[in-house]
Image (tube, rainbow, N blue to C red; front, side, top):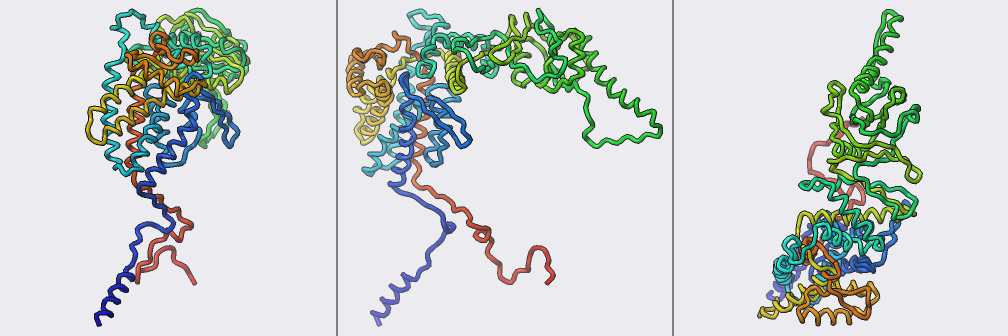
Length: 565
């Protein structure tokens, strides 16, 4: 009997039903191997973008299903176009976008740093260290580094060596452009970026008020900065060529009004008892538009711009009276014209007083490449600018646009934040040395983790030298030696292989301290997020509607449409 009881107990244990929580086909991954799998995915993303880092970084050619080709070495653009589907690796996409929005430059650096932090954490995960221990040590390291950057940063307004604000801005812009396709013309575009940003309102610094027009053809050095507004000639009707194309000190009227004879689209119905009255209705429509046009002419405006269409009747009417008009003007261009000239966009024509009209010193229409452009220049209090980019190939102009945008963002951040640090991997090496020394004062296991975080920072100078074709191990040994001697701004010299190192501050390789602070903070946060994931669950897609159908309720009344059978 005892043997039978034991056997029945064993059998009852085997017969216990399994608990099913997830739909059939759901995928579930968890444990140490899963964390390592996520780390490997992030490293794969880093392997793609790391070769684009620095002045000697390579470019990536990416084309999609529709045949669009993009040639770029901008980290954010590459990661965006990769269309990453791995859920953990998407975190790297987010930090690249955040870095681009916050600073404008350093998108490749932030991805490479995050992947290196994860690589250093991987060995501890494999050895059985709890992820929360690593996360805690990484967060401590981050706080120490952000404080150290503030301590090391040079405030150019209070610096002993007097440097003009313009000089600092140009050097920071040139450093941002040094790793781009247009690095050979960095002085030309650096000056252009500073001139454009200094046109803006100092309090707002809204970069959307800097228009960038791309015109294929010509040399890249034929690009120009217009201290005012320029936009491409809009669609025009017959009579446009009879209009004058140049004015001196014209008054400018900006409208959001359609100046066109409108066909009735709303199925309007008019019933007439007397057919002779039909003409009066036609005349009323014409009188409405003629009244609008007369009001515009009486206002004294010489240049009329509208966001909506200006029809053939209005175009000819203005041409007969020696006025210039353009309809369907892009909203951004119209906003910049208003900012530059002081015009106020009108949605009705009831009160066209001098107060709402704008003025500029000169208006003209000029040919650039194959297109014509409208220029509003000689505006003394202009708070806007336009950059016209030239270049041979469309892909080259697009990359020039991306590069110049990075430079504009860097100049903006330099004006807002007065602190700069040395680039060329100098700041990373100094932070690494500081963190290594700090880790030796800790007695628990976080000493090793903080030391590995410090080692991860060396990936930036290592990759810079590797991409330049130099011996990265040799260069790093030299850098460690120089920083141990107290040369805090010693960085990678990619120009002279024999020299190996260079003083980044003396060589004018300057970056805003915000760039480095944001990169380290974003990379650390991304690393901590990925390390804290211990399980991934992917819900099954329904193979068909039957799989998603609700379970039938016993003895329930039938639902749905009644059927006759």
